[in-house]
Amino acid sequence: MHIREGGTLLGLLRRAAQYIFAGLVVMWLTFWYLSGSPLGMVRFFYTYFVATHFFMDPVAKETLFTGSLKGMMESLGEPHSQYLDRNDFDQIMKQTSATYSGVGIVMGMGPDGLEVVSAIEEQPAAKAGVKTGDRITSINGTSTKSMSLSEASALVRGEAGTTVVLGIARGQETMDISIVREQITLPTVRSKMLTNDIGYIRISQFAEKTGTEFAEAYKELQGKGMKKLVLDLRNNPGGLLTAAQEVGSYILPKGPIVTIKDRSGHTESYDSDGLETPIPLVVLINKGSASASEIIAGAVQDEKVGTIVGTNSYGKGTVQTVVNAFGDEGIKITIAKYHTPNDRVIDGTGIAPDVTVELPSPEGRTGTKGDFVDDTQLAKAIEILQSR
Image (cartoon, rainbow, N blue to C red; front, side):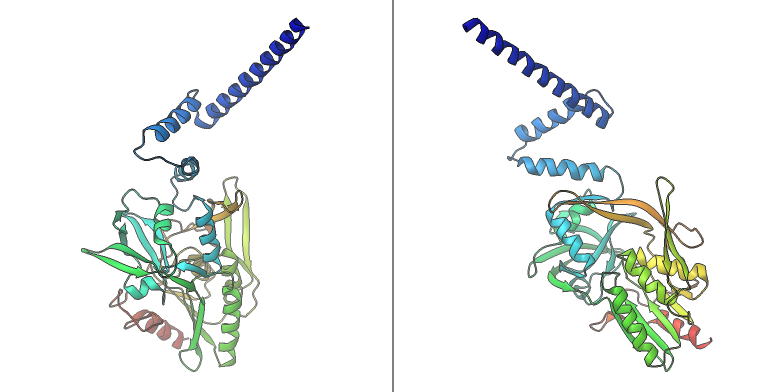
């Protein structure tokens, strides 16, 4: 009986050893596949061992694991693709709903590093003096030189009532700007009549309710006699493609607004419903106009239904999707490039205006609504529409 038990135990041990060995082989092959090297598993666990045993302060395992996921996305070398932890995921969901806590800027990676793509009007950063095009050299005293976009965003965001200090470089001038974070709720559309027949609609970003807000503003101006329109997309960082499509349905004829081509060559088209007969139109853009703003400007230009006035736009012509990962985390990844109706790719180049007009004081703004000082761009738009 004793020998039989010993034989059974030995068999179980042998079987367990076989399973462990098979598991290690599968793990080794998996890491080989993922890393492209037979030493992939050794490199990974050696790095993990060094990080946990030699770093000057203890590090939580979850921090290291999440960092490896973020590093995987950052290694794509594309600043708009990133792994979103719970806080990042929550913030991006709030931004697309136009309600979140922060300072009201959109950041991007420019040729000289981290920069302000857009300082959204009437929001804490713009009120404190931050301008579109400013380079952000530090955040709360920490240099941004080797900082990723996701890391910078995490440092700038925070609870309402707290302060963040941005180191700003503007031309040859450098400064520190203190900004108190606020709970931000953005009405994305505002409108008014400029003359008896020229309406004006300003879109600050394309969020969930922008399409509805634009439709209401458009119909209200029609009731006041609007026969021509100035659409102001300056310093509009973009947002939801579906919102841009809804806006485009009012100012563009029926047909494609933008097409998206992915890595496999699959093409998806977002079309205008042609809800209104196009009226004489001028679209205002500048370097702060990005993404969905450029989609609208590019479609207006290609369809020849309006005149683009201002300065060259930012040049963000890529499509991001947010994939829910596990629980409250997600992955934001660039999946395709935008193509205008005439098949132009605007990523990295932007939209060149039909009529280039610089502002005499591009940094000067006045009033609580962020209106430009001596707005020569708007004046040119009115002049063009009055001649039609």
